[in-house]
Amino acid sequence: MKQVQDYIRTIVDFPHEGIMFRDVTTLFADPRGFRMAIDQMLHPYAGVDIDKGLEARGFILGGAIAHQLSVGFVPVRKKGKLPGRTISQDYKLEYGEAIVEIHDDAIQPGERILVVDDLLATGGTAEAGIKLIERLEAMGIEVNALCRYDGA
Image (cartoon, rainbow, N blue to C red; front, side, top):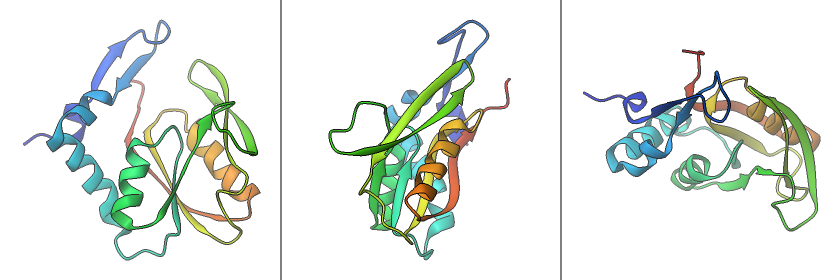
């Protein structure tokens, strides 16, 4: 029986030499794999008090999970991609640094936020998402990642 990780391909030396890039687009393209990933990530939060989901790098997984939980959704985007007033946070990647942003009115004080990430490598994007949540005086209840990168 296939597992979620079986649907994810690895691309060697992308985007830089020495990086083993985990490409989740192959997972998203397969209806069984995509459903399996969403179901597995969703399961621990059935019945948990959550106000919004926040995705640390985009909105494919976070949007689907928020939809299934019937909660709001906040995308974290690269600097300069959101049209309204934003707050930003820098973070470290395996191969550099970057800045992400959310709208400054996307999260209200006291809200309970589930942080979703497709892949935890350094944990930088998830940590940046948590810092943004805390700056808006909300509570990050947990980080839920599709998979973790162990360097192999």
